[in-house]
Length: 102
Image (cartoon, rainbow, N blue to C red):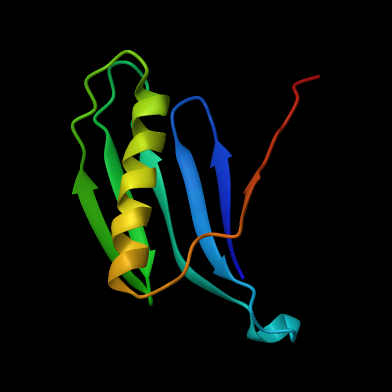
């Protein structure tokens, strides 16, 4: 079972893809994780990916006023390509962290 965890903020999106196929809690692992940074209106958008302790940084040209939505679309497309190359199945669940101000 693969679970995508997403945490959106005002200027970033953090995410991680977990492999929960093992019934033993310690054997569960992060397949990869990352963060979109610079999603504010005047920020320089970039995507930082971490897989097997290797960090890759990509400058992303997000041009619309809806930069968070555009970054989510980019992540969706990236996941489809990534999962296909690695012969992973589909993502089984998506979790989103919600924080209410108070």
